[in-house]
Structures are given as C-alpha cells and as structure tokens.
Image (cartoon, rainbow, N blue to C red):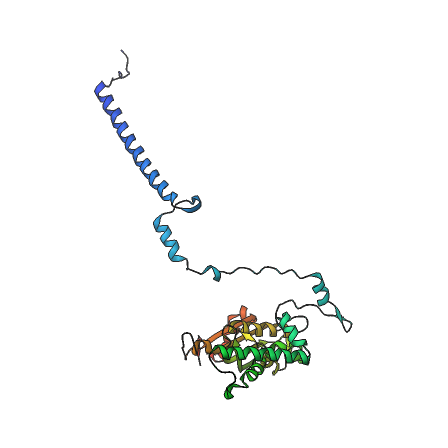
Length: 323
C-alpha cells in the first residue's frame, strides 16, 4: 500500500468559480489602469513640448518657492567686445618713450578718461569755435523746450534763459571733460601706512540721467592702504568728477570705489552714499522724506565682515541705523 496522499480532483463547479473570480479581478485592474492612463494622457496633452506631467502639489510648491521676476531683470553675463587691432595698437602706442597700455578695468581708460565715448572726446578736444557752436545748439534746444511747455521765449523774464541754462548744463556735466590722472596729479605717497583711512560727509550734487533732475547727498569713502596713501583732497575730487555727469546713484558709488581701487592699489575700498532724489520728490511718488543708501565694498572690506563693520561704525551706520 502506498504512503502518498491520493490526488484530489476539484469539482468542475469549484474550478470554474475560481477562474471567473480571477477574470473579474483582472478586468478591474485593467479598467483601472486604462482609466489612469487616459487621465494622464489628457493632462500630458495640455503640457507644451510634450513635457512630463507633475502632480498639482509639486507644481504649487514650485510656484510658491520661486520668486516671480521680470525676465529683463535676470542676470545675463556681458558679451565680450572685440577690440579692433587698430584700436589696440593706438592704445599701446609709445608716449614719451614709454608704452601706455589700456587699463585692466573699464573704469579708467588709458588716457585717464572714465567711460569715454565719441561725444566725450569731441567735447574734451574741441576748439573755441566748436565750443561756441555747441553752446548755440544747446541754446536753440532750450528755446524749443520753452515754446513746447507753452511759454513765450521772447518774454523779458526768460529772454536769456536758454543761454543761462545751456551754460549751467555744461557746468553740471563738466565731469565729462575731466581727467583722472590730472586730478590725482601724482599725489601718491609711500608712507608705510596700512590702517583704515576715511573721508566722510562729502557733499555731492548730480543729475539723474532718467529725468535730468538733481539728486544730492553725502558720500563716505574709506580705504586701507598698502603702504601707499593718496592726498586726502583727491578723494572728494574723484567723487566730484563722477558726480558731475548724468548718473544713477548705484553706478556713481561703484565708479568712485573702482577708481580709487585702481589708482591706489589698496587692500580694500568701501564707499557709502546717502542721497535724496528729486525725481521721487518733485514728481512720481512725491515722497519728501525718502533717502537712498548705496554701498560698494571691495577687497578687504568685502572679504572681512569685521573690517566692514568697523567702517560702518566709524561713518555712523550700525546695524542699519543712523547713529
């Protein structure tokens, strides 16, 4: 007699019920998967360029964690400008037996001008006759402006206004004709000094390049020499040269800092400016109590927070509050 358990045969009714149950489960799974695939396909059809669909929660989180910005405000690295060979040869032409090369930064050109352009050079190098022609053109432009605002340019009170305004505008923008090298005039002295030097409360007046109305305030300049110091009066003169141009405060602050960094080659430079803008006071939002503070820190002031805080404390700014 065999010890093995005899094989039991399932009844036909039991096997048929199991098979039908499996078919029902399989059909439910296939129907559910087809429904999900159809929903995914509908959602993916709405996405551009066949992008893969992500969940609504993920999409909402992404939108709330990413700041909405104007595409024009995004940073784009500046394109490298090709300098013609003729210009490079001219920049490196020998002067008095020495080769003068273009400055490594765009702040000061090889001839001492800052941000030179064709118009700047024409004004710097013009003859007295050409200066008279320039003044006459400006006089005519101001007369046209007076007519456009509804005034009578031949009225006694404003008969000489076009010429007065033209001369005033040339004075307001005289910084275009000034040369950094002439301002410094070799006033660099090797004193072995390597501690902070600050000239504060430098009063400046400039013209907003957007509306041609004034902004004015005070600038504070500090630098840490690398044994070489600059004449103290040269710091306000450099700031004045850049201010006597059509400006924005942010660029004015940066240009002064970069110029001092290049001239003195110090360990660091810090410049802070606080100004009131008449384009926000006389027009626009018309907020009389507002002031704008800008800063530019280079070298040691940028790398060392302790040095930067010492400078801010000495000029009267601590923790964002005026002392």
